Length: 317
Figure 1 (cartoon, helix red, strand yellow):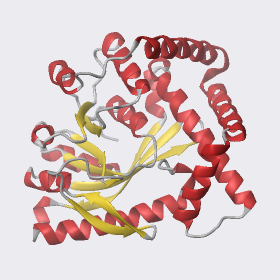
Figure 2: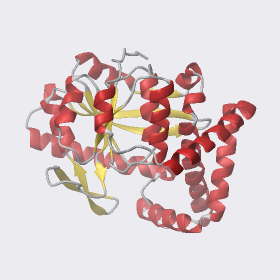
Figure 3: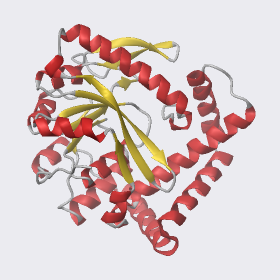
Figure 4: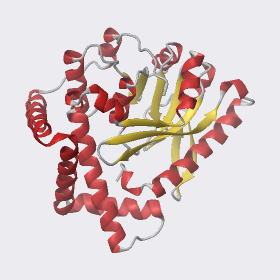
């Protein structure tokens, strides 16, 4: 796989974007304690042992968290468009809990994993599509979905030398802030993912493409956060949902191709970014509105197919 040199992190830009996300005292204490404990466990049992421990903890959560089990069961029935049998439902629900716990453990102690080892845990399917976009020098837009560990993927992409940018809510998880703070202080040489607010205006998105970044964000949304955001309603899983089109339009106007990809977790803390296809190439664009409508429909169809193939990766329950 081709790797790409990353520019030094623009800390002033990153800090201004993330203003107001400092960790509270309790969050810092509790996450520091958890990080220390898991680091000790990692030193004793190795990464493979930690993965098995994560699965065990996830199974324990599955046994006791009946409310979350019930929410997942409803989401599973909606996605599969049928009522799964008891054995299938239990298997997928336990896998859902175990996968979520393993993702959090891996992200929490990512800074403790030797870089060569972490590098080997990540693979990109159809990497040529990404590399061709990078080689053009105009960046690329990677249309993701709310399924899979995007926070893990951004760290692994940086480790592989890609300049990446992402979009998040203003009120984000304490875990992501904690991990990013550790990397800013302990590993200033590590390529930092440039983060943008989900409801911000598009100026920063233009800058990302101009600087040759791969910008990834989820196009499927629960709600449209700001009046200026453009979207189309497409039927998916039997109901109408909003799919953002603004990032696609900006990418095309910057000469950046639009690709679709999914994050696929595998056993042993291994992850794969599966680049499905190029949805729109600005060099072959014919009529913007029609091409974007076609691309969004293809995106929605791919999401349906992916989630039905990997139902344990449902995140919105």
